[in-house]
Amino acid sequence: MPADAVASLLALAASGAQAVALLAVAALALAMLWRLVATRGWGNRIQLEIDLQVHDAGSHFVGELMVILQNMGQRVQDVPNLFIEVRQSRYVNRNAMTLVPPVNMISPDLHAIALAPGVRQTVTWTFEIPREVRMVRAVAFIDVGRRHDAEALPMLTQEFFGEFGSTGRFATRLFEVTPGLLVTPARPGD
Image 1: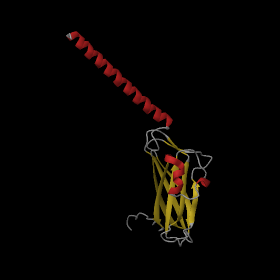
Image 2: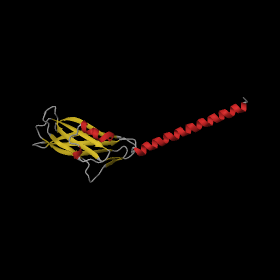
Image 3: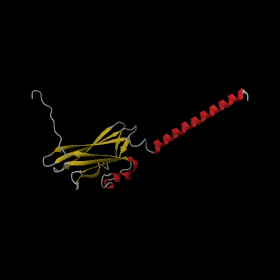
Image 4: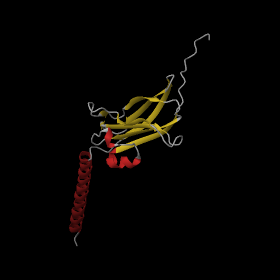
């Protein structure tokens, strides 16, 4: 076989390999674009935290539940569902009373909260806590799918979260009911 034939075969094989590599890169780019368009982005990138502050109001305590949302993604994320529930802990009382029944904190008039990338948003809910309650369990649940009414969730428990698919996230925490101390800075000379 002459040297020119071998050189032309090698050149043909190299250009064929380049064409296959180009097609593979184009297919990968199309697959990534399809995922971005078809699944509305790269998924739910919202972190969810909850906290509770308790204030003494004399005959009862006042609780302020804070739900903190942070968009960790690269695009604006709409949150149409932000459910909360607060109930007395079953560790203390087996017949735990509900202090805040499941409610969607985002009103139907608002439709959704839009979180820009990197934004940290706090949403609060105030409620009354009877003095005899010592521990409460707070649950927050977000879902970025279609909007749901509070009747969609009779209780905020994991068995109901599965009905929302992969677009939901939840956080739960147990809080001791202890009023916060109001600390005033000392004045010079005191």
